[in-house]
Each structure stands twice: as structure tokens, then as C-alpha cells.
Image 1 (cartoon, rainbow, N blue to C red):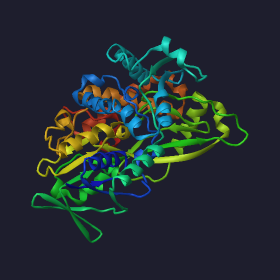
Image 2: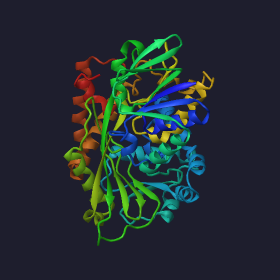
Image 3: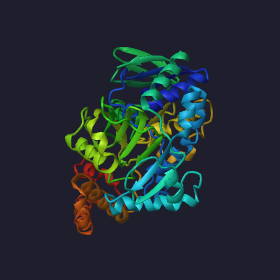
Image 4: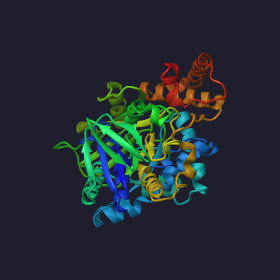
Length: 459
């Protein structure tokens, strides 16, 4: 079959590889330099447990989102072994992640940490607690508590995307770059794509455009129907480059990170080589694409690196990374075929789980196209033509949003504000209640990261 894939980030590339392996004729559309790609800018941590939030398994939608990433994470070992060199696979197997708390940790972050600890009995191969963890730690720093995640690995995103580019070229996947606008039409049982006065006819079209999927939805509104709006989750991180005459970086394979620090994925330090670290990451959700980093985001990151990780790194150079996590209007994935046009399959809205989840998502798409029309059934909550999914109950959502907001405030303005935690949370809760009242929200929980978008009538 002839299949178009719109988007050449991790999901688009992995899907192109899987389908071309099966003999399908693939045309991949995308940006040659992957500008704004979340995959390209990411630290490419294959994290699931480290992304866990309190009450993750008490809400069906967040539970399914967890398993989308978890089921994919289990596949990465085999993928690296099959497609990378023996030395690269050997390095990959050695990698792991440590989660820590310290005197900068807020009560909000600590709730996520304690919730993760409780899952150790359910996931004994994935979570090890402090006593065992300390023996394996290769970092020198002051921690209040530690959790060791032996299966939480990472891969340099540049290496991953380069490898996928090479593999699809080998499979003779045709690539068409830098076409920004796609117009689709139904032609009998096929889909016609028009771009820059050219047309092509396809059996299937896969939309994996990340945050840029929203422009595609707007340009094809009548055909695709109602789909949750997708925003730009603008993130800043940086690669730390060793400067001449500074101390050598310690050789290790361990990610050191915090959990959710208030509407962001927390700080994380990733050793990419003996001369390079990756450190991230900020997050700001907007309907507008931001191509450059915010000063405040860079300030928070550099202060976090120096104060909580390694003061000695401050004399080295940094290279900024900017990408856009595709964030839907309820923060859940947009995944599966359209109701009225099942030849069009969406695979976006993965937020910060795109790289981790791309193996599972690409398998779902491959199986569907190869004849298994029940392929997406276990993730049917995330189908494209759906209503927005509530984030817990209204009361719980308001409480979580207030604490997340204050945690973010503390992260940006200093730990001295921890002394005012209860007072600040109470004030923020009252503010958010007023927003709910103004919007006349009934029996629906707004995700903490989306409060300002609702308040400003972007949703």
C-alpha cells in the first residue's frame, strides 16, 4: 500500500521504518532540519516511572497514558540491539536513572515522590528504594532521599534521529521536505494530499506533526471533524559542552533528576559523553510557536544546575535546545483513526512522551494498516474524534492545580517561599476557584498546566 506520513519526528520516523520493513511504499513529509521538533530538542530519556504523578492509577485516562509509555519502554532494548552497533547496545544497557529529593523539594513534588515509592511492590524490577540505590550512585551531592530506576534509560536524541533517518533511506522511503500546508480530500476509498500545487493519492495518511498538527487540523476541518486542540508545549534545555581547562566530567551512565516540579517535568542531568551533558527542562504551553528560549527559563535552569547538581559545571559552555511538546487541550494523546475516515490516522498530543512511546505507537499503526482493525482498542480513550477528558474531579483538579502552581513559583523564586507554602496554596486555590466560576465549569477537572489557557479562552 502507498502511505503518507506527515511529520518526521520520532513517531513519524519510527512508523516509516516499521511500515517500510513490511514492504509498504512510504512517503515521509517533514522539516529537513526538524526545527521545533520535541524529539530533536529532548534529552530522549525513556522514562515512565520518573514521569509518574500522584494518583496516576486512580484515573483511567492517566493509567492508560502510563501504559502506552510503559509498553513502549519494554521494547527499546530489542530495538537498540537490532539496529545499533554492539558497543552502542552495551552502553545503552548500562544506563539508568536516579530520582532524588533535597532541601529544594516542595510538598507538591514530595507527594509525587512518595507515590512512586509506593509502586515499588507492584513494579519491583522497575523501582528500587534508598538502601540499594545508594550503593550504585556515582554522583556527589546532598540528597534527602533517592529512588533508583534501573530500567529508565536514555539515548542521545541526535543519535536516535540520525539512525532512523539512515534506516528509512536504506528502506527506500521517499522524503519530501519543508511543505508547511497540506490539504486533504477523500477520493473514493483513498486520500488525496495537495501540497504546493502538487497532488498525490494514498491508501492511508498518518498525521504525526506534533504541535504543528493544529495547523493541519484547521486546514482540513471539514474532513477531520472535531479533534481536541493541540498547543505548543515550549520547552528549553541545554547541552553543557566542556570548556578547555575545566575539570573533566565524571564518566557515568546515570540520569539524575527530580520529579514533577510544578507544571514541568523537573530538572534532569543526562551524561551524553565524557565532554557533554544535557540539562533540562522548562515548559510553557501556548497557542503560539516560540522559536527562542525565554530568559526566565534559562535562569531557572542554570540556577537549578549550579545549586542542586554540580556547581563546578558553571564554567563550561552551553548550547540551547528549544522544542515544542505537542500538548492537547486535555493533555492526553490524540491517537488512532478518524471516525468517518479511518484511512487517516492521528498520532500526536504525546506531550513529553513521544520518544518513549514511539515504538508502541508505531506498532499500533503498523498492525492496524496490516489488517488488525482492533489495534487501537486498548487506547480507545485517546481516539481523535472525542470529547475532552476530565482531569479527576473538579475539587481534586483545583487542589492539584493550586499546589502545582505554587511549586512552580517556588522553583522560579527561591526555596525561601517554602515557609509560606500553606498560605500560598490557599490563595492560589481561591484564585483558581474564581476561574472555574467565571468559566461556569461544571463536573470537569482542568489539568493544572492548562488553567491559563482556559482563563484566557484559548480552549
